[in-house]
Length: 82
Image (cartoon, rainbow, N blue to C red):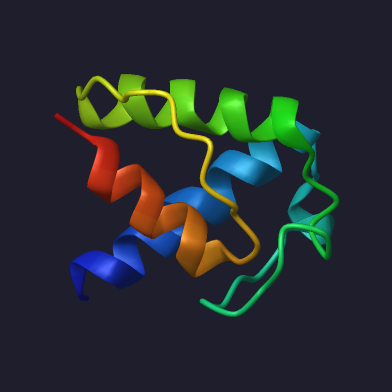
């Protein structure tokens, strides 16, 4: 499995955990899935960034870039990791 696929799977699992989804409610993501479709707000993005830091042992810097899709979010997380 590619690193990108692993990161999308991590993100789906993180969102499921954050939103309290049951096994029957698990989400499936693609790079083009929008954050609006996932009903994620700015606080959810911050929470995902903190989870990413914990899970990948990196430190992220704040960014004010516009995040619209799952791909945007993953690229942002990768680009701001030190």
